[in-house]
Amino acid sequence: MKIAVVGLGLIGGSMALVLKQKGFASMVYGVDRKEDNARKALELGIADEITDLDQAVAKSDVIILSAPVSACAILLPQVLDQVTHQIVLDTGSTKMSVLDAAKGHPKRGRYIATHPMWGTEFSGPEAATNDAFEGRANVICNATESDKDALELTEKIYKLLGMYNVYMNGKDHDIHVAYVSHISHITSFALANTVLEKEREENAIFELASAGFESTVRLAKSSPAMWMPIFQQNKENVLDVLNEHITQLRKFKSCIEKENWTYLSELMENANKIRNVLDRKGS
Image (cartoon, rainbow, N blue to C red; front, top):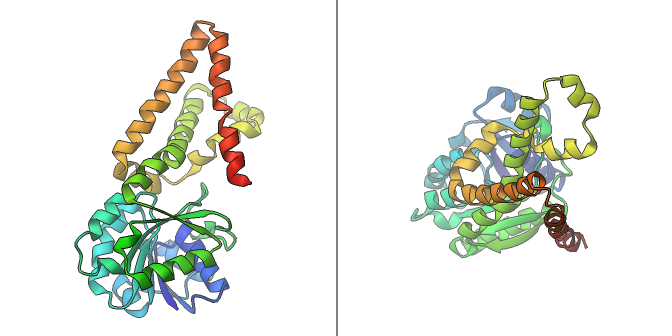
C-alpha cells in the first residue's frame, strides 16, 4: 500500500513508522505546511517523499489526515473531492467537526473517523516512535456511514499498529474525551501557570519538584497549536467538564477553609474509587 500522511508530527509520524516497519506501507508520501517538519521527516525515514496534497492523494491508496482538528475539517472535503478508490481517515481528538465537514459529500463512504487514544506531551517528527500504539484503544466513529471495504482496511491498519478498535458515535466520543483527556490537559496547563505565577524561584521548582508534581504538569508541555483547536472544536463539552471540575475544587477549598476534615477525607476516599476502574482496565 502507498500511504499519504498529512501532518508529519507525533501521531502521523508514528503511524508511518509502524506501518512501514510492519510491511503495510511500501511508500509514504508526506505533506506538511512546515518545511522544517517535512525536512526532518525525510531525514528520520518517516516519509519517503515530500509532496503537495493533491499529488499525495493521487499517488496513494490510504490518506491519513493527522493535522490539527481545525485543519482536518477544512482539508477533508478537499481530499474527498479527489478520491476514487482511496480511503481517507483522520486521527483528530474531536470528531463532530470533521464528521460534519464530510456530511452529505458524495464520497462520504471513503472516509473513516478515527481517534487513536495515544499521545505524549511532545510534538513534531522528532517525537514520532515505532513503539507507540501497542495495547491502546482506537475509536472508530459513525462506522455505518463508511463503505465496508474502507472500514475493514482501517480496522486492519489499527490492528497492525497494535491497537484494539472501539466503536461509538461522534457526539458520544466528544463527550467522553472531554472527561478523560481534555480536562487533564486543561488542569495541567492551569497548574503550571499557578506555580509559575506564585513560585518566583525557578531553582526551588527545579530542586523541590517531586515525581508527583512532574507527572501532573507533564501535559503542560503539550503543543498549544495542537490543543487550542481541540478546545475550540469541543467547546461545549469542555466547558461542561470544566464547570464540574471547578465545583470539585471548590469543595476541597471549602473543607480546608472550614477545617471540615471529615468531609475532606470523604472526598479523597471517593476519589480513590478511580483506582478500581483503572485497575480493571489494566487487567
